Image 1 (cartoon, rainbow, N blue to C red):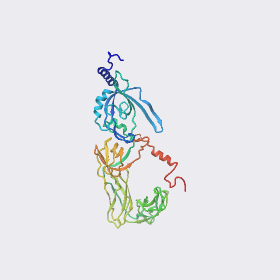
Image 2: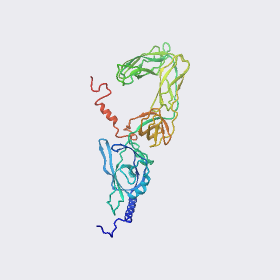
Image 3: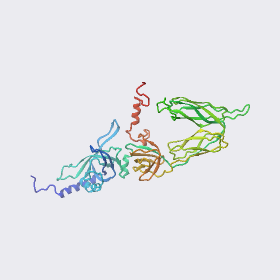
Image 4: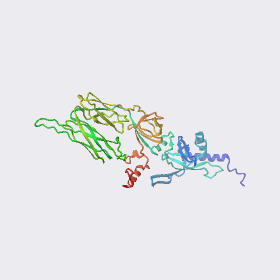
Length: 479
């Protein structure tokens, strides 16, 4: 039986130890941020957390157990590349948690436990600007001094980000730890729209159009189009002006069904467009099509006078999500027709002639349709939620470059579609989608463009193709 004359555990004695503990931690500790986990979705059978969020961060003093460095295995080389396996042990005050943290988080929905630190919560450690996850909470060390416990010992491991988790505390120094973590999708947005401009000249005895007489088959890449040269000029015995050579480009397609060609990745020569129709031809030039992995394509040219010449782009415009229509304004017996091409920046970078027209007496005016997207403004903010206007897909902003109109996003819930507007729910920024890139790999030669370092999908695919090439009709051999 204990000596009744020594109480050994009064409130006053316990309060003194708690106050001394608090003061020691405040004097010799560091200010961390405690980030409670909000459970959004759990597995109904084994109660595994499959979706969680972190929206609140509270400054709290903590004592670092070992100032010689992190615990754990450190940086190791594994089959997944270089991995940081750092551990951190922190000691916090029981009283400070119960009187400061608990009142702030107890009414937050889906916190689960608020009266003590819990496993799964996060700690932001300022000395290394790193996030750690609490793996175990020891509440009986030191062991019942004067019949009480005064500290929690937090066993933490470096946080492993899951793509289904959202970290949005409002503190940039915390949230930016995950800026390049998880799956990142890149969207090329449409900038402010500006109508493209182009000019041409009028020419005689140039190619009006090139007619395909045989589309050929099994072309895997664009074949070469060769057109015989226009005659050179002569000065003797009479002056004959020289001509300019025509230049054509093949357009591949499968618009005409071919049941004998089973592979969808092989094409026919559907059309030959004119980059330059040339001029001064005294006879119809020969046209030959070669290369591209296919065979059989043939074409013939037709020459005419009063045609439009090569089209020169004077202003590429901007904000195009689709190639604009090109029209020719002028008097002619046969109107000219052309097709435009846009680059990944939404600019018109080429206009090729389908039919150069006939009988123009004056150089026609080229009219290019304006970009369909006129809504482009604002600047997306890091970590804000963006929503697709058509798909209602949501995501969070990882990075936004207003100069190149590149938007990098994570935490996707759905799939964005080409042409829809992406609206920032905080900034109000609104831009149309031009190109969606679902590849998560960055540029290995660009240190500023390193996304998921474990995304080896392309490497795995390339290596697998060395074993079995499924682009072949029968990758296992000739039947």
